[in-house]
Length: 296
Image (cartoon, rainbow, N blue to C red; front, side, top):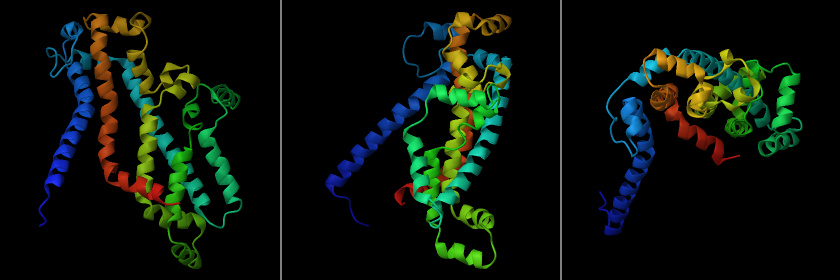
């Protein structure tokens, strides 16, 4: 065993202190939200400093959130957008990435350039809205899923990953009579599972946090994702949210004070599911991103 020099020990010590500091400044905001969510509404309203434990203790915020009807509507819609939307994302991205990764594809270079161009320049908000409206998707769930069906960045990352599959392996499959779909789903996809898992995580998190598309394209509250209701809690002034005020009175709380606690409770409720999903893909995350970004 090689003994560390004095300079190396100093470096390790400083590096450890720095990492502890980084953990603290990234972890505390999450802890602050959790502390506030379990605080008593009246005590939280009086607090004007950082919290290192709940201000009092109360589950009134969570009780209200679990009784708030729109939360369940938002959860159901968001799960639909995440499951169906991510499936559409991955299917189209995998098909596109495989086609662009093949060296013998006709017009491969100009098509790749055109696709890459869209990553830096877009038609703009108003043209996008008009396209969705003219296609009859306005106020439809497909307005949330189809316009963002493919991310150019994810497509290029997955294309690079697919391009690393040895050509000899694909040629052997063709000699055995395999068509392109068999090669893609039985050879290329299993070999590139790390990159696919990472891209799936990117898409799923994006779908879970998506709200701007709903703000633009949806007018029916029954189709709102969870993040739209979270936006109402965090952004819309108290006086404009009459439904919230009415339900707060029903549970016997002052709506202005309760809303402060409910904000944090809603953040926790809307964040926990995606945090539970992340560990299952974490082992693929770094490897998948590095595979798609180091070469190409």
